Length: 206
Image 1 (cartoon, helix red, strand yellow):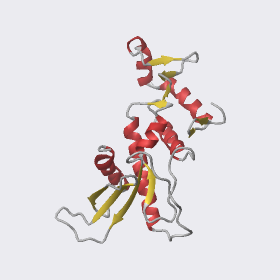
Image 2: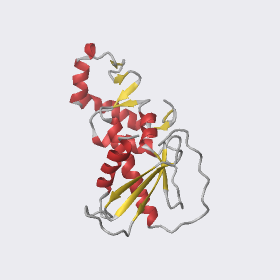
Image 3: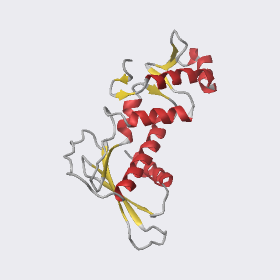
């Protein structure tokens, strides 16, 4: 690795070093190491760093995983152009970020963690945009290559309350096919609750 770049991802060398060092303290990794003869997909290199095939194994450390997800998500080479003044937030979905990450890193439950991280970020930025005044010219967006690789979303509020106390609709649209999901929600749902719904209703299906 040179200058902190791993192909389409930009990951700081210090973070890679911290991941390797943290492997030494992780009980789950030691369990894998003790059973390497039964798990041929894992290997130790000359520095006793554990890899799954060609992917670095990330220990069960929430701080490290959050840092890795943050760096991958903010990488200018792979993820997340913000929609600036668009009323809809356009976002490269968790599928894109997951495929980028899994080329170089592995941990159990990575896909779930990526989906949670991306959905929370997406929701946060959409709410932020709702409270900002539009500025500048709208930018032409590239056409996505894969279905559900990029999505747009919006919240329709001010609706009458249903029998289940829903008073808003969350609209999530695939930019390529224009297919959409209309999710009944409550306007007082937390970001964490919306992230759960995003996983259940969007990530699970796509």
